[in-house]
Length: 391
Image (cartoon, rainbow, N blue to C red):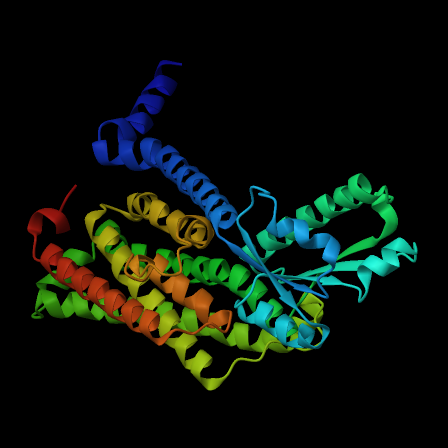
């Protein structure tokens, strides 16, 4: 048993004798989980509060006289009711899809007369299921209709169930499929690219240290800056090939999107979207390569490099979820400057047919700035004997 405890002590010393290993192995995983749930919780609460507080623009087609109470009573809901005619219905549906209005309440023509004759008129609430603001507006509309039923009962003694209520979604099938892709694909793409960069990047320098071949490489009549540039190019090339593989897989899957998502037509992207996707994938690959090469340079061996890189990998694969809830202000440009989140947000915009040139340029510029900074740091690290020959 004495020898067993010696082995235990030896293994534990690998962690507890090095503050960096204590932080990355024991403290960082819990810290990341805390930050994830803190951001998501705050983001979800903010999203719900903003949606509820935002004024909903609701159009009422064939507005009945018995609904006039909405202009007279404070219902403690933030909404605007606008009257509309039967002939405007199709135009209003398109406006819901375009985000110009939030929901439609459609009453049968001569609704009040039909109620009085007990011929079961119909009321429909039409909204865009892909929009949180439209969904919130539909809930407000349903509440108004429920109050309308109570008013009919209290004022006229009419059975509240005298008319049928139906909630319907207005959907552009191609847009719906694109939104589903925009929710799913960023996580898949980030996982594949960072997993590839993790394997290649950690071996590129930390592997050389572990095998003892780095010293031989440094003795060659080659500038260290040229060595690190070569490492960056080779690692980035392999990671970019992985990114392009992901892109080709994405293109190949698009014809099957109709069967995958239950749509009549598939999702078809134009030349602009395809070029944008390629550029973003290349930026992600270059970013991942340079970050993981820095970690590989700082680490003493592959095992330590993998341990140090794992938090970056975790952040990369969960950041698509965080960006949905915690960074949801469409007017803010901050998200297009933050590393990792900028490429994810732009990727999601392109996939959902919401390509924005300004956001794309900000993302491109900030990503290039980060990559350039990381290359500069790598060159500086490679000139440090203490870093390269650390034991």
